[in-house]
Length: 273
Image (cartoon, rainbow, N blue to C red; front, side, top):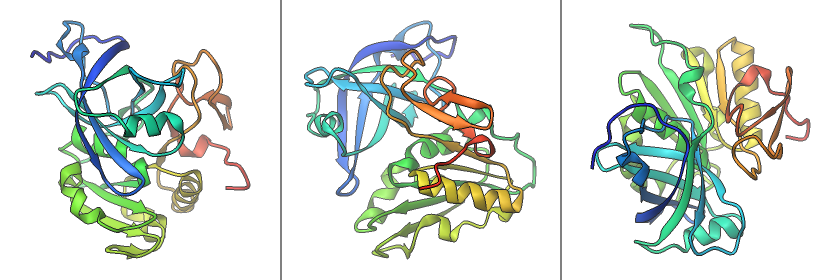
């Protein structure tokens, strides 16, 4: 199968599930072979982008927006980390190997649109992920192997997590810091408790809204650039339905079409976060 790099436009394809694994009681991994990769108009998806995913056999009308966690060009395989939440993600969790799901994408912008150019001998970049929020940061880690990254991974429970990290290629980072709220097999606390932004040239973060708010505030205090991948309920994934509004200092933006990655300094967070 050829995976030549060239111009690429959004595709909607039925893709076979070739691997699945439970990461912990909440998060699972699904790998799909992506037929679009064999087409001559293909260019690889970029870190930060997402796909709308829906099983072929589904009771839901719309796909669920899932950030790409890893891309393997040689096997044309897309890898995703997904949290079990509503009916749509429960259906994804119930899929069996060789079953098909409809994948529409890649959608959204990329970390590379924001991340400053690497400086030789400069400070590393911190990647801060909460739960399934580690997914688009894993993609960034794999996309830019020449950069120095320190990976912060936070979870509600640390039970069994460290045994799963090697399969996620997270150990490619220069250093990995794992925290869990229950302290099982990891540092005890929230992952932002251990973040010291002044040590880094930039911080890239993805996770629950309160985590993003805390990371943004800590970076602002130290005047360190911070870029965050936001999550919203999405209908179309292409900006047409206006159902995924993000409030910014420059007005309302669409998480799917204008994001999901934003300069954290532009985001107006809810006071209740």
